[in-house]
Image 1: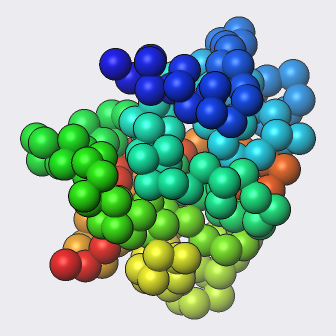
Image 2: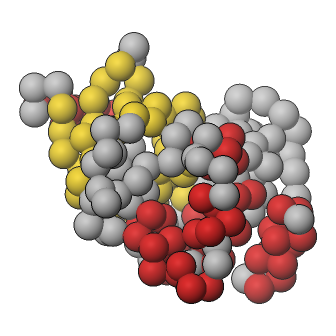
Length: 189
């Protein structure tokens, strides 16, 4: 089912999903994500549809009606949870969020992963250091995340106290940057 959702999204936005050779960096210097090359001249959505690790996120972006927004000029920083991160949510949560009647809630969850800036990891680390170890990050969804450094990497803490580690940083896009994370960030309820 996930494959058909991604194929459907690719058709909607005029893309063909493809894969690239495995490795840590593609030939363009960008990190590989989900087994696919990430092209800095493509936008967030154009690259995300190729990641085998972000099928749930792509389906959610489509269901939320955010394809045009995240294909737009930006700049955006997207903290992109993997399929494994979505699988950690309570059983039935993803299916419930994807229902049309829950679109507003889905939009809120997804936009709590988006910042209206192009923030590379070095800049985020600098802000964390400047703020004494924790930097508040305002998202377009109205959430405030707390960014910290843990074991040399960036960790985000959501409004419920859940933490997400950046597992792949600085995936450059034409309209911003993606940082892959291992937990879905949730707004306060």
